[in-house]
Image 1 (spheres, rainbow, N blue to C red):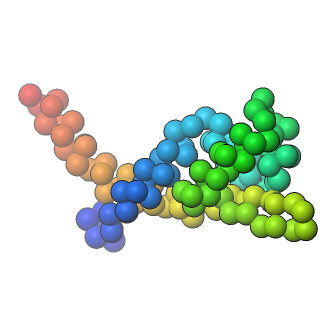
Image 2: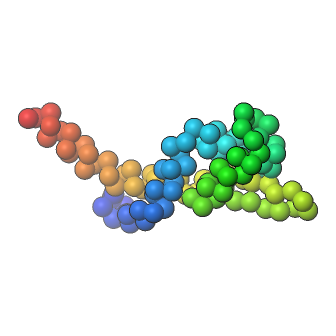
Image 3: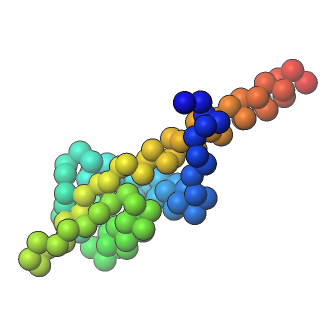
Length: 110
């Protein structure tokens, strides 16, 4: 399938996704969840110099972007990474990249 055949992802979904990836704390949270597995907000807060409440706010933004999912077990809420949405970013980059390559090539020729 060529990049032209791929559907262009929803702009709102891309904004939320790149918003998550633009924040270094959220990237670290995502990396932790990917490499260490599901964690509670309290467990995650132990790895950062921010409060548990701040971690929960980051996790809510990440959940809105589809980057994490939560599961309640008793009193604990465990968060896990859901990286399938990264395919959205890859699709957009693959669709957008060739156009930028052509523009840059024209600038070099000028």
